[in-house]
Image (tube, rainbow, N blue to C red; front, side):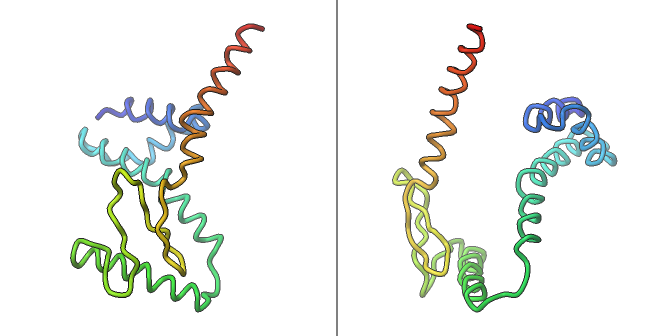
Length: 147
């Protein structure tokens, strides 16, 4: 991967920073790269940080504080699923609601103090973002072109 490819993709995915901000981000992350593989790895780190790690840390900082008994119980449940997965390759174990594989039924496990099985997670949001929004944008763009 080349440096300019990283900047181009960053401009596409993070247009709010395309007036020079993406260049600064790329400079920060690529300052010690030596070859195309290092660039690829740094690019993966950029995406991970901007999409997952840094927003998660921001939310965690907002919600930190005293831990309730319910929070402690939820933590034990979540850690049991993770430990089972690390130990045996499956999150399931005694006393836990079965976490089924994501297949054509699109069932998922809703983690909380009570674990429940749901289907088609965020189906309404997915429909909006993939169907309704493109239609609305197309209609909006067509109306603007007619003006």
